[in-house]
Length: 305
Image (cartoon, rainbow, N blue to C red; front, side):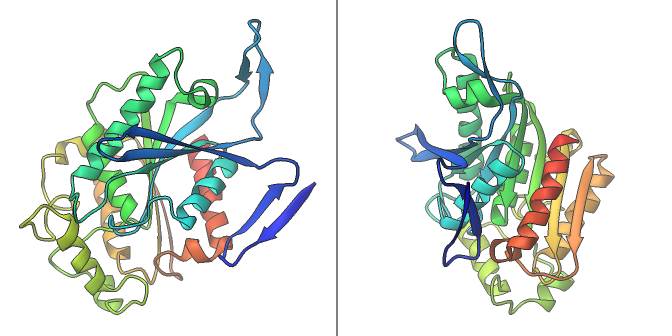
């Protein structure tokens, strides 16, 4: 029997009366640096028993590394991040690993990129260790891993993927990149930045201060960690990216930057699936469950294609 539970937040969660639809586990992967992950796994997995009595899944699930928004200054384990991860785990289905990377301004970029690397290397260690994390070893497909970024987390996802290319991560294979309303910038203003400069959710004054707080000291908005259009040390790696999914909405101050990114990726020969809705605003999928469901349906097809 299903019970629909409505809370004060805009998400409507459907849960099983007898048991939850998603199980959650917190793991500290580096106590000294304060790096942790929260693992979300759906309970509706198809299982069978092996000859040695151990439980195995008949179909393993992709492993997705989720990077939250919050302008790299907040957002760790927030209500919205948890709901996105829960919904993703059920919808895909997949194992969703929410990486709680270190935040600015105390930890400026590229610190977050190294934290993502630490999380992926931890997963690699579990794959190689016969006594590794059972949720990953019994349910996860290490050859189907994706980095997912929402809002400013999309910025971290993109540059983390470029940073990771060429590293020995076997048996972990990073197959693709998922960016939902990623936040980028640049010194020269785009049309959408000028048009939505006074946006109530993500005004230009906020993003300007954000870049000052998280970019390397002394860098401007044309630093490669902010503006993916400029030449940098990772430019030659762009063509090596796996398939990419980009989601955007009109009314978002960053929408022109997102479209520029798509065009640039295509020019480098990257396989890109892009979906832009003319009507919307930054973070609409956090307050409009219907829009979020549409996005998750698109992502399910992207992951299974």
